Structures are given as C-alpha cells and as structure tokens.
Amino acid sequence: MFIIICAVCIPISGFSPAYLLNEIITRLGRNAFLILSLLIPIMAGMGLNFGMTLGAMAAEIALMCQSMEIDLVIMDIMMPGLSGVEACAEIRKFSTVPMLFLTARGKIEDKQQAYLSGGDDYLVKPFNVERVVKTLNRMKTEANENKSDNNEEAAVISNSEQHKD
Image (cartoon, rainbow, N blue to C red; front, top):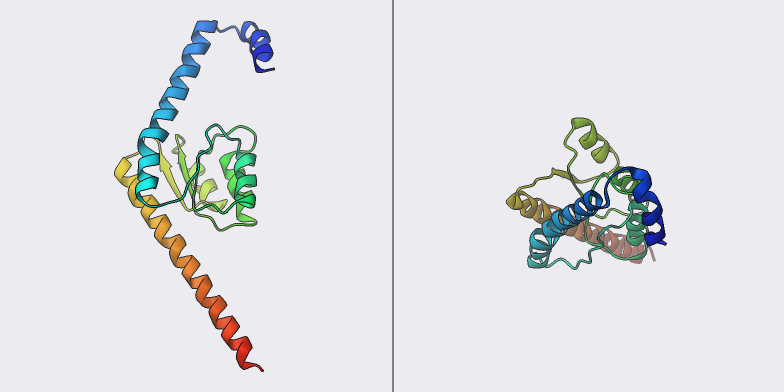
C-alpha cells in the first residue's frame, strides 16, 4: 500500500524522486543517529528499563503508556496524528509517568503548551548530552521519590485501617 501511495503521490508533489529519497534518508539518518548513539547508552547506563518506538504516532504512545508500565516518555511536539502536547495531556489523564519533550521547537509558546499539558521538562534540539543526562537523572530521582511517597502513604493508610478494629 505504501509503495502504491508513493508511486501516485511522488509525481503529484512536483519534487523529483531523487530529492525526496535524499530528504528521507537524511532525516532518518539524523534522527537514528541521535537516538541510537546518544539516548540509548545514557538510559541503559542509568539502569532504566526502556523500550524505544521509532516513528510512533502520539496516539500510539498514549496507548502504550496506558497498557504498560513505563518509566519515562521522551517525545517530540511535532508528531503525526496527535501532537506531542495533545498526547501528553491524554497520558496525564491516567498516568504520572515523567515526560520529556525533546524537540526542535524552541519558542516560548511551545514550551508553555508543553508544560501546561503536563510535560515535566523540555529540551531543544540540538541538545547538549550532559544536559540530557542531568535531566534524565533528575526525572528518574523525582519519579523514584514519588513512588516511595506513594508506598509510604499506602503503608500509613493500611496501618490506620488496622487500628480501627
């Protein structure tokens, strides 16, 4: 189906097939390089359990967050279907998973929308690897503290319920 769509739409677009192929390869190569060479070793070294979905639509990320236990979400604002901001707002309806926006959009309005939708942090590409490491470490620490606070609350509630008898 993809091949049929490409065969029909490439001539309609007015761009040469060589130009389109060059753009696709350049973009895939650039993004794959960033993810594979920078983020995977960082997250693996931090001891995070992670899976990576490349090219996912924002709605797919929201569904994954709902059906799986996820430690951290890193997403772009500009995604197919729902924007990353819309996906973040949907995820916040049922999850407190830490969310980092890693995007090329650096306008103040974009950052405000990301934070208002429930995003925890926002980094603009090109990014400094040290900054990403510090941000992920902070987010991991905060998530662990929140989990331990919730466990303490549960212990306090269960102890108070036992004393009612």
